[in-house]
Length: 489
Image 1: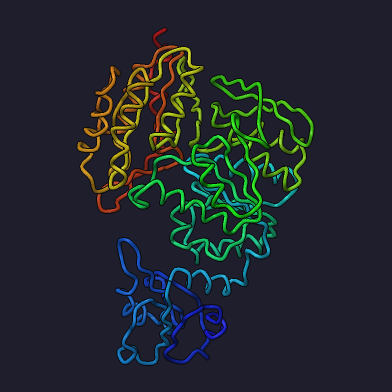
Image 2 (image 1 turned 120 degrees about the horizontal axis):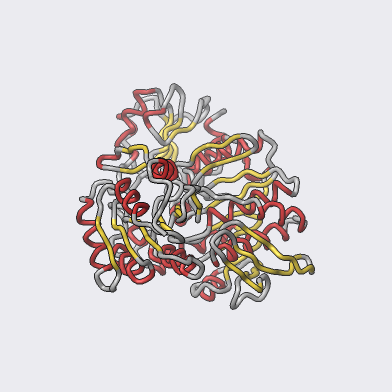
């Protein structure tokens, strides 16, 4: 594909060199460069792609796209395209290279602090049950047809995203439901996409190490709705009134208290499922979902509202929701004991409070909460989460999460400071497997052990980017298999 064709949509570009050259492919990672590639130099928060231009040229790059004013004399026979924003340039070039795949799909975007993944699974399963071929891009997996790829981040970099959308087009997908992170909106990973429906689930403290303030965080989320035909927002979230003022497209609300369009009644929650009634297409239906918790109702309302707008019928909605299962989201692990073990991705104050408050309403015994906090991330939430667990759980086991390059003992001490503000009982056990084993050993009949923070993740992140295998579902089952058959009653 000719370079001049690939870059023709870039605005305010300054070109040095020949554009009548055939391009092999596009890369933003210099290590993947091959002969006749374009290298797009992106300035990241840890590394600057401009530092790898020399390596890219040595590997065979014939064009450099950059924001910097490079000295062309030092790059003979290399075409330099200077742009104002290399991330936007990457998105535009990639979409053209893959023949604008998003234009051939109907996109549904979901943004918010909590509930994105579960809502995405629900929408995908309902649309598939309706006979609509649907792909999904999200935190856990990217799926379409029989293909299931483990996700490395919630929203892929624009080049990878365009390739994924092209693969979905080739697989004859009609719809794609996508989790859209605040990072991806700020960093222009989804630049140029157009969504049929955008969903706002909620907003709570998270990623402030990146956004700085809650105002910036909300502003980032609002960017999704600049790319949408229709917005479906949580009417009960305290940030929704401000968000609605930022949204220009047609908007509807869902919720249990303040919603004016889509709501539910007669909500009943137990340790196995949630049941509620709602009107869909003017018919009152009873819906049962095997993910316990009030938050499940919100996720379901968003999914049902979205799919109804897209023409889904009630039989498909009921079928899909009755069989929904989301890895690491209020996931009950079958340990065949008199107590229950639940794995959940709750990794911030609001999500931990939500899951603990929810299970506290139906658990007959004690709640034993096992959790830690990630290193090199928002430190303010650590004592907050400790205080929440100390207040709502009967016993807290403080442990590691993904410590990364921080000292685990410091992280755990900051969590402990929060627990100490309450009268809650607690114990610190640094090794996460040992912490889980301890919690399961002290569990009695009707108790629930909540293992929070990692959910679907199958690894732990240690120093210098090292990862070790750690799938909590396997860990729990291994511990359970070695425990006596009889538990304290």
